[in-house]
Length: 467
Image (cartoon, rainbow, N blue to C red; front, top):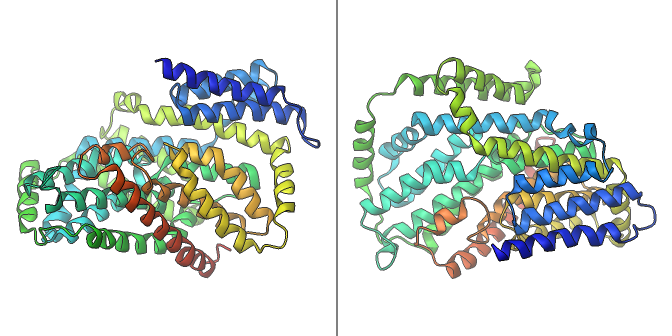
């Protein structure tokens, strides 16, 4: 408790110091005051003296009581369709868990392909890849669907933390975790922080990225990472048990226990497929992505896949609605008040003579490894995305390419530490991987991601016309 009080006081001091400091020449007082409140709120999201939602409500109240924003301006963020897209996607996540469709997909793939430890790793990756478009939470997807299945497999193969960890558990646990991180990067709705990137790109640079654009930009480097990372881990942590025909027997028994697909699973599968089709064809149908997701939610409610209590009980969705509505709106008003343009001019003058591509590479490396200081992908994006993207774009980098790259790297940096994002402690807590191993291998994997996403991702985005 005392430690939280100290962290809370530190956040307040950050805001007060900035508020009382005279703003730089060329920055409006309103912009500087808003920056002070925003910085204090972001510091609270990082240091976590209170929950992120609580910090956001305090920040929301502060901007109005101090007269920095009017009540109407302060609440504008809650009307944004992008935020409602992520809220609705959380409801799909609940549907996958409640109906058991996510587990069924995992066991079906395992029964078909799980006859070796490497294939099992790819099976978990494929399962996560299928579920990710409708599960914008690594914690819900990794902790609620993938981890329980993988952990059960480890026990079945008599591979427990300690002397038998190397039998298969160490490899499967770490591979499954990394697959969750990759899927989060590939799909716009695979992680809530991706939607923050989209909203900030709209507010700061006036350009919109669709669900389809993000997917097309990320699918090729994402598949490359999905194939390469488990193989790299297979070489780093070669499992003693190479062949795993028992996994197919386990999957068969689990599916037998589950029985035939229930009506709720079939209905969710139809809704899931329909939403994917509508998202992929949104440029032709003109239906906003958020309302595709809301349509899916309405169908789940009408068909009783979910009931209203399920919607009310999805705390993650309402938590995202609050903090995203507040924080993204603050960032938007920092741009409207001219602070972002001032910052771009200031930093751009220091980088004269460096090509925009060189600036992007430099910023990407720094942006990735600064995640050692964060325990949340969203806090990482809120604290760094606007500044880093502004500098890159001021140097001449294409807007959408820059936004997607920084959005992706805000996910892939989750390999670095055992506290990097919400799902990291779940997999680390299994006890199969020591902190030293996680940090050492995580650094290597983060470097591989940088090479893949810049070496394959940027050229691929050029080929498909993103820039």
